[in-house]
Figure 1 (spheres, rainbow, N blue to C red):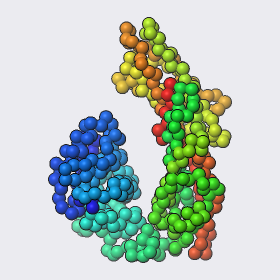
Figure 2: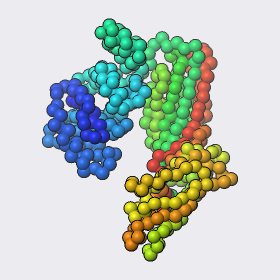
Figure 3: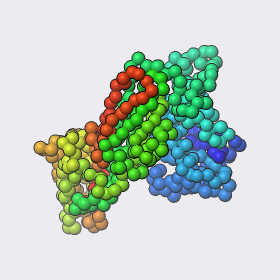
Figure 4: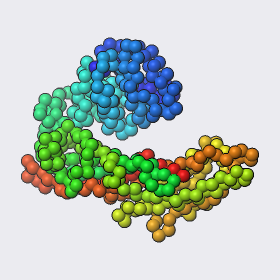
Length: 418
């Protein structure tokens, strides 16, 4: 299975390595560096790189490449999913997953990796189990460990490790029993010049924070479960029940976890919540160009669009821009040619606009194509796919928990062509 793991920063330095079976030389990463040089951006590095004696599988998150080395052929998604789980675990333990934080907590990192894989095979990947095996670092614990020479390794095996529900420890007790669910949807879209949708799809997740005493059994039902066509579940979900009744039935892990991730790709189900009116023109003979864009809401069911940021990579021939925003602030970097406009909230009564002129290189030919506009935005209390939770019921325990459900839509890769 997985022989070694290398952590590589954005400047190409291997700052951490872990070997489970046999020590694999760092020189194996030369193949990865070659692929990295060929890729224009970090995200474009191939996730699977075959070498004469090994396969290199990698994920890129938080400006770090997590590169796994395997010697025999295995399902690549299996390894990639494990690498994502490693990143999520680090984030859960340390708050952020970054190179300085990993270096500061290198002992805990090695202890966690030792528990997550046993002889190259995944063993304990559930956050709750890991936290009982290896205590998360705190300032007090670090000071005590330094003085006494002890480690973060727990004294006894987790109670849930050998049970039929290994993701939940036994004997959980809370004074306030509560279950919160966040339905978060990211919309990826490409809109053409005329405002028609070229492609649009929604990546959604339901994140849960469950703090319930004992061993509760929860069921979650949706108003319109048929929307969910491509779904991946947390291991706690009973798949047979979902297949037959389209109801989520599960004994939840304790604390934070991702209950499910889903994908809506049917074009007719994806509503586009914003529109952009644009007029960008370059003249052949003139050294000035016109620039005007307006952003407005559509299909938001009356919800406010907030956190709107518009960015656009201008052509190389643009020297400077003299623009006036009706709201928010804008910047133009004459070196990178990147225009950024922080709009904030959109008021439907007074739509935000950015107008002005562009200074072009004298004598240079007109740019071949107009720039594309990228949008970021957030809409609270709206799932753009129309997904709605119908009810949440609890069995197996007598108390009444506090339940809450929150919806949010945000832009993923949202691009408008001009």
